[in-house]
Length: 175
Image (cartoon, rainbow, N blue to C red):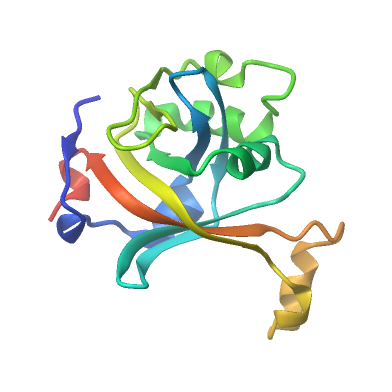
């Protein structure tokens, strides 16, 4: 996939569609050591916080990728063309603890430009982030009682803000 660097000021995305319909692949770890894991994510945000561009992700502590977010301070978010939908679904439905799901999905990890976590050669968008804030969601803070229904096992997400250090993508992600 041919991607170009995109200045953060020119990064354009249909936010709800990207997170809720297209999904992203979150990868945390270190590419150079081949120590990383990926998962599909459908909840998150992009914006500005503390005068920095950010991506916000949420990961349940039971997910294998959570261990990598605890150990490493960078992550990537990758979007893929529609022809990779089944690969993204596989990444989201299998654990990397006991299988090489990235290989099974047919995706190719590559070095990212600004962070240790890998990107994917097939991605149409790569957002590279360095963690700047992390905390566990507290059910006492839910102002909408319906939110609790998302946690029948009381496995509340860890929320993580990552400063966006680099963005690359095809022309559909650039103003």
